[in-house]
Image 1 (cartoon, one colour):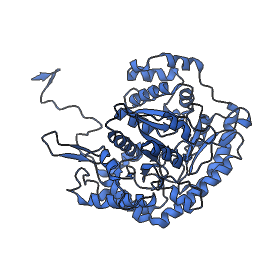
Image 2 (tube, one colour):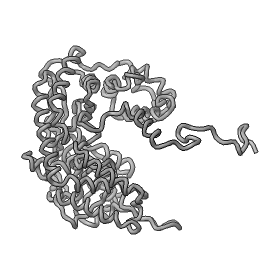
Image 3 (cartoon, helix red, strand yellow):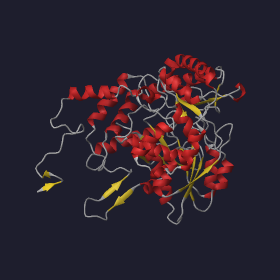
Image 4 (cartoon, one colour):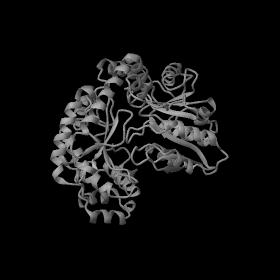
Length: 500
């Protein structure tokens, strides 16, 4: 038999993803070294987003060895692998004990903050089967994961404005959006974008008075804030000790310094946790019961988290919290001394948003500033403007940031001087008009990739790290248009037309 000119016995051509003959481990590691050469560094504190470094090699080694030990253990069935239950009880219990609970506090170990948030929304939705058109109310600064949860679970997301000066949620504005369809209200501790803690007690009390659950997104701050309080920071109450808070998410792969893939979702009571679970006996295979979105899942992250908590201990986290707080305070004071820059709001965690100072004349091009600092060894995360909230550069300070904060401030000063002559960011008006009129969803990957140079976007060679033209363009577009563009970009990036 032949198929398109080939016989059935013809072997397919070799592909780089599957060589004809197996390769040695040394060869593979050598190739990985080449492939990761252009990646942002994951240690040392110069990448102020995405990664969290304890600066303790022995802790990382303990986590790595524990991870590998449990890598092939399948979390699908805890009755087959009772080690999962033992480890999860310890990790969830330790998290609950720091956040207003104890060993009896119901919790779920998840793969990250987004999964924790999706499950929190699912639990709130499923707890109210009488609500046919469920809604959640969030401040506009709430993490994008709530919008993702709404999209996945068909729950409407209603966003309330925040205070334009403090960037904290406005309890009155949130209360105004609540109605008979509201199944959950949300507060952040802190919000990722600006590092400020919403008025959790006020939001939760209003929710409780209306009979609505309240989730606190403490993914980034849950494990950090108690240690900052011990180091002398003023931290308002935000956890399960607050009346009306019914669930809380806390990522241990952030300031818990555990390997990626580690978050904990806590509940005030068992009933709400049961609504997060999923079970299925309506098929002829094994009965499925899942505490998370995933079914099969390696226990490596769980073991890595357990080992990290054990290796660092309270004293280790206490010192990391002190160092991160010290670095943050120094960064804030240093930024305020740089002409044209200012810190947005009053950060209560170790997350800082740097904006332009309106009193300094023409605003600096923050996107060009981000490119300049990256070229000099420091990655600052650009954040676009939205609903009157200004564009800014985001930094997350960790336990190792204290060692390099003075160098970071020096680089910031030098880069601010370098970009000041450029003036404010000026996206090409004609391209902005074009992109708001073209139906980008109709383009295939090849056509979209071909459109990028016309939009002034060149990601080839050394320009790959120069994202200012992209960010200027996106910042000038409506949020919905931005979403279409970045979705098309991601699709093209993994295609041969852009990804290579």
